[in-house]
Length: 229
Image 1 (cartoon, rainbow, N blue to C red):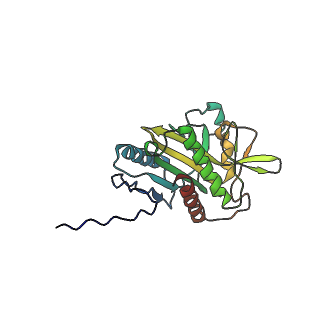
Image 2: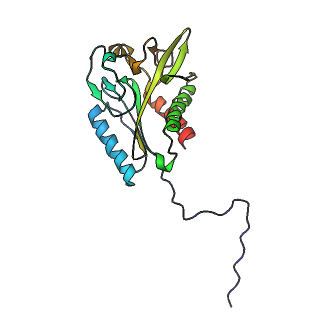
Image 3: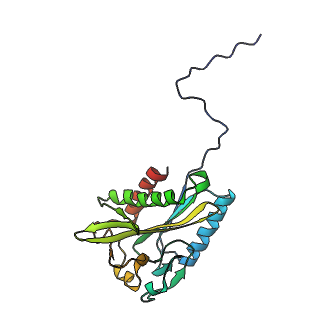
């Protein structure tokens, strides 16, 4: 005669959905040496395609580029004041920006189908990621209506410390953010950054925050988990 199966005590946790697949964690990739823009773009697009196909996990790639200018889909030719460095036309949103040594670029490849299919909300989350990261260094980063990026107030001035631009393909987001750690800020003189004149650019170093790129990476990871899980 079969013994009756003992009834498990319900501790208020509810039923477990054992059929629901476990979402793999976001992979973090960090490149120590500067990465050529063409190589980074090709790798990023390939990874985004693989994520959409379900054959790769989401990824955040932290890197630096050699000095370059990139032009987003809204870039105006007159905002390229002097082509000091190679110029790349990209498929991301936004206008002209600068990338170079001393700037931490974060390419974020996330599957919005598995998160939230809301591009505006995603961009706002990227902004909040940067704001939370800056807060860890006691810097108040802020949004400004009509001005893309993250801004800091210095006396009567407002300077941009971080930029962002995204592209969505098959509901997979790629491109991402760029945070000025200690770049040569004079390199911005060749463009009108993000098409916004009348404001400057700044960096952690210019604000008196001397940190290593590794320190910034730790802060970015910590803040990312808070915003994106």
